Amino acid sequence: MEQTIQVMRHSVAEPRDDGKAIPLVGALLYRPDGTIETAARGELRNGDHAEFTLLERKHRSERLDGSILFATLEPCAPGARRHPKLGCAERIVNARIAEVYVGILDPDPDVDRKGLAYLEQHGIKIHMFDRDLQEEIREANAGFLTQALLRAEERWSEKDKTIVLSSLEEHEPEADLSDFSQKALEHYRAKIGITEGTESDVFRRRLKRQGLVVADDGGEVPSGFGLLLFGENPRDNFQQAGLLATVRYPNGKEEIRNFEEPYVLIPGLLEEWLRKVLSLTIDRNRMERGEQPEIPFEMVREAVVNALIHRDYDIKGAKCQLVIDSDAIVVKSPGEPQSPVKLEELKTFSAPMVSRNPKLHYVFAQIDAAEERGLGLLSLKKKASDLGLPLPDYSYDAPYLVLTIYRAVESVSAVKGGEALASLNKTHKSGWNWLATVGAATSTEYAGAQDVSPRTALSHLNRFVDLGLATKSGAGPSTKYNAVKN
Image 1: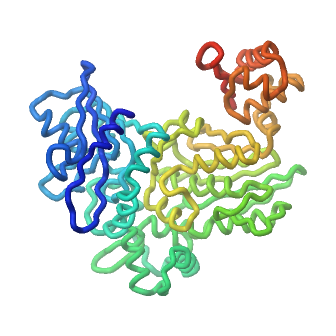
Image 2: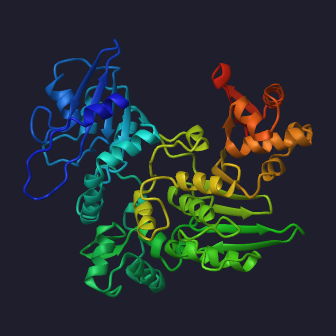
Image 3: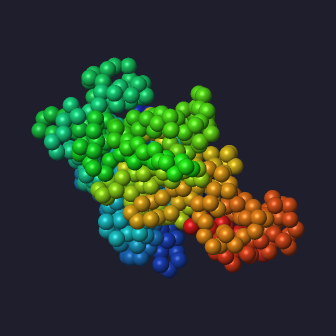
């Protein structure tokens, strides 16, 4: 991955008069015999994609069966290039490549997630670059990505799609524009800074460009995503839509609220409801990226919005859920982690930037309710660290991806319970709560934090390992003890 990024930096930008930024792209081929070949965009001819240069110009007559390809940018999908040119994803399939490592997704709506989907549909195993390397690629391509997102709106509804990520991209039967909530449209219009009204050509063209309104028999109708975001009653069309929220009080009573409103209104409505049911001092704090109140609203907002964006809408018998008690905030989102993201990557907050539903993600990013291209992981991790809370915890309990946000250091023990934690004395429990908060530490770090001798630190940590509360990685003084919270 690192070598491919170095190759990327040798890309040759073709001369242009229109000011269009050209991406820096590197490709690397790792053959079964261990030999390596590389190519950069424009290396041999202006405008040639890196994958095309590598597979067609350098190795057209060779058998590449079983090879592994590394590319810093998502390979373009079928239909993304002018006929009769093949997309890079098609060329990779034709070359019988076994695995592909992808740096970052291409925001172009003709490519975004569709290049990956095409490869996966043809049995190719997909991996993403490490998160820190993704950031390096994005930084190097900042100009291209900014322009690509703007171009994306212009083309979201213009071309037939060879690869469809979700049926919600299409016209929803029996729906029309009168199903949109005027309040939701006004909220979105104000957020994105359009001065003309929601009935104006400017605003309607914006919805069409974003794929939220699509053409049908000469007219315009809502897409499935459009109805989720702006529909007066999204559940009229999708029974799995919305959010079921529950607050459990220490006295055993519960407060329940079913959020079935247009998606763009849910973050604000959720904050408003929580302010009423929880005794909090909010002041100027707002859920949309404001300061941190007593309950970590920014973390709740990030978690809930992520659940709505990244859930699997093909699972129709389950809804997103939010459960809050005195120890934890639990958010459940139907569906396994989006391929190629792995559960372990979510647990360590190192998951690559991949979106299951790019159109939903884009709109929430536009109203400043979601990270532009990520999974909200960095916000969750940073906010937990800033508040001195244990790191949030991901698990999978079919059919839900479950995120647990702990409300205090002691909450991990209270939530997890069990014989192992119950067997710890007060000193051990204090140490394990600290380890659960930081996630992982060496014995030296543990000794310093708990003010115990190195020998005592090792004794504590090995007890945690014996009880299944921690695992070891590495060797010698650099051995890391990793808290196991599931």
